[in-house]
Image (cartoon, rainbow, N blue to C red; front, side, top):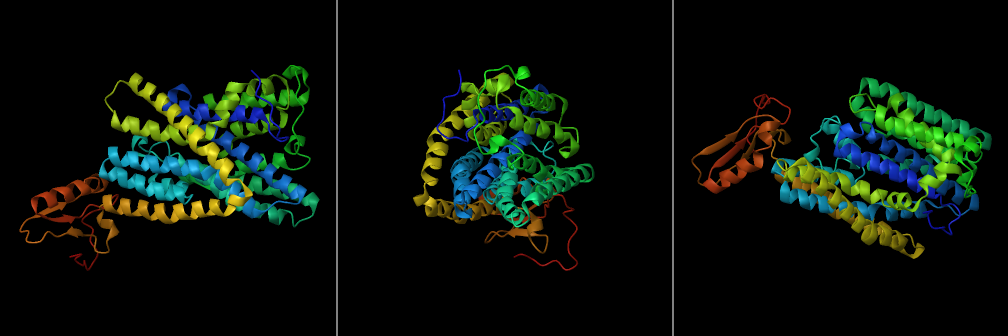
Length: 457
């Protein structure tokens, strides 16, 4: 049952097993929050792992004298973007076939934001993560990926600055930055909980906790594969006890946290410290063996694809089958998530990583990213504008669609409840040869006109 040996000296199969636990926790929480009320903390486990692994890669490259930013970002593109783009495009197409015009416009905007790695800012504009309608936001989960991508953009530059300081000052400086981010997270979570949930500044300390473990002297396994041991965890010394306590904290976070508490702030210490303890101590013993069994490793290796596909599948099934038996929807969600994630992992994620990681394909990787952004980001904006008819987008506060020769006018007035019927009103006006005047404004008074309104005709 042990994971197959790998020739890579830095690979740690138990971290893939930890990924499996994290992604399964998130998936269960999204299936039914009452089953695992703190399952969303699996995202925080991913944050710590990302900080540790990315920092390990950078520091190993620097230690060997061959680190380059071009190679680093090439590997990030190969790891993240092809599978991400596939999921986003398929989700947008599925939303176009199943969603109302209003919800499709929102999905199209989220599509563009996700490709630009600013999905967290887009979702911030919509409101509380736990209060948004889940079946109408199929790209909601991209907020966490955007946070990680923003970290990947900034952190190598931060490390470059740190390495301009004396060696003995580097870890203390990193700890100071971590503590500053943690303090900011605690303050923001209490005063402005929605920005506190979404923003990199409030989440950076979680990834920096993993980064700190990768620094020389923090964790010997950051630069070499830890020796395996068959000794029971409680007799393997302090690392085994530390890892056991860490797993206890992670599992505890899944059950004691819930969506009604301010988060992250100090409550995120449970999954963050737990994950850090596992990284530091799970170099042998029972936990290493448990997390390294083949099924756990395989799920962990598929965790990215599972995370990408589970939320759009859940959202679209709930939106399309609102009156279907919950048990049937549950089966459909699990089935299509496994099928979609499995296909993506085998046909997109793994081949793309092999292809785009090759040094001779570096330019191709950057061209893929640039071409996709040039083509698809404007597409999302155009689709959103086409389906989102809101008078607040005009200077006059009046959106008009004249019909040649029309003698009658259809008028739509309201807030967001009116705006969501904008496309329907436009279709009716076109079908019946009517002028259309839209006064609806999401979240605003539709009759609060400027002092000198100007006709859009």
